[in-house]
Amino acid sequence: MRHLLRAMPTLLKVSVARNVAYRAEMTIWILTATMPLIMLALWNAVAASGPVAGFGQPEIARYFVATLVVRQITGAWVMWELSHLIRTGGMSAHLLRPMHPLWTYAVWVATAIPFRLVILTPIILAVGTWRPDLFVWPAPQQFALFVVSVTMAWITSFLVQCAFGLASFWVDKSDGMFESWNAVWGLLSGYVAPLAFFPAAWRPVLDALPFRGMLGLPVELLGGFLRPEDAARPLAIQAAWMVVSFALVMTLWRRGLVRNGAFGS
Amino acid sequence: MIHVRDLKKIYKVPVKQPGVWASVRSLFDREYREVRAVDGITFDIAAGERVGFLGPNGAGKTTTLKMMTGLLHPTSGEVSVSGFTPKHRDDAFLRTVTLVMGQKQQLLWDLPPTETFALHRALYDLDLRAWKESLDELVELLGLAAFMDQPARNLSLGQRMRCELAAALLHRPKILFLDEPTIGLDVEAQVIVRAFVSAYHARHGATLLLTSHDMDDVAAMVDRVLLIDQGVIRFDGSLPELARRFGSGRRLVVRDAHADFSSIGLTRAGETWEVTVDASDINARLSAVLARSPAAEVTVSDPPLEDVLRKAFGESRPAAAP
Image (cartoon, rainbow over all chains, first blue to last red; front, side, top):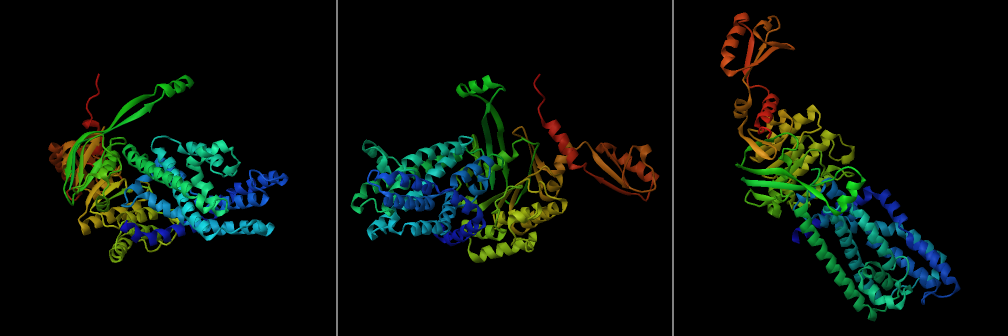
């Protein structure tokens, strides 16, 4: 760990340089991930005739702007990187270095967050100018819980992508599996609709699954939809899934290395 | 330094017959074929040795190198490198070795190699002074100063390969595994890489294990040869021993633009006359040459390494079962 801390300034510097080098690609990536704005327009139209599950038009707008922000903070691309490295033999160079390759990827993905937020700012400002009355700043305690929750959401999302990437040790095209996961995630995480829109009987199941902790929970905290006193249980579930994801990735890594064919080179 | 005992790597490769029905059947009943990439090899390499690991494509050279660097887990057998078991990938082991794979890049593609060098300093936890000293030496030996601040994608293959070598050696490894380090390079770049590897070995006394299909690499960079074919070691010895064992004789080269030696069996090759004869016949042939041209410049040597290896690979294989 001390080695990692000593390496951190260089890892950060090189990662920022890489993000600057890929700035055009990243801008396009961010601008294509604006599904929450489409959902905002859709649900805004639905809510014109009256609130949906307690969400009027202001709440809809607030929810999906928060979704846009959380989605950008927790976005990663490590699944495609790992899958490519494993399939082409590029992983060999990483395995020869005395530091776990996932650390370098974690730092690279994390240093993209400021770039993403800078690109996102004009979009949020545009929405704010359109309807300034929509925004309600979360209370300090709510914001502190949001920071904790979005950090765990980032870690879990990163680890889940790692798990699918590492699946390439066993299957040729793990990105297809990840797309299927993504479809389920979109539906059950609160990405396309707040979880409050689902039938009440579904909620215990939805709350127990990992998807809410990967997006919906930090969105609810940022948007002021979840009171701090009600946050303990969902945060505990979120933390549990983060630990499970970590254990899964470590297991896949260990077993994957035994299976590694070091294809190509 | 390196001890390998009865090392095996056996892959199970899926086999699929052509056709739709075979595809459907393979979903339920997949067939596998066993490929014995490395089939029980044993050898030792002492500290500071320069060893060439030679063999035809698919002989098991790269697979062995990968097992010695911890990239592949052996099916059975033992490997010990500098006291470490490579598959455990201890940090101390990874700081001791390097593997250079021809044209496989560890350079950050869109950034200058200087950024990769800085990253490697962090990854290998090198102190600033040691890193700078090592980098200065590599920049000098490999002639990197003119281009190492340009993005890697803008460099020529030869320039990139030199930077790859620098990145791989910044931590001053004691053991170098070089897998076809000159593949695809032009002649000038090949010469630079060979000279560099020899200089690095001379300065740091590093142990060197090289695979290559380029016999100039072998002649310039190794003293001992391990011949591997079909996953089995067929020969282990020095280059002269290899030539004696598999070379069919001695090579006589005569430089004389005016005389004609065709009548005594020599053939013209540009400005020289050449013949490869049995060792017992070399004195008689030499006398015949000097009788025709007492002032001729004559060289007697082992036959070309390519010929020796071609013969070695042919002879070393066991006869096919009837």
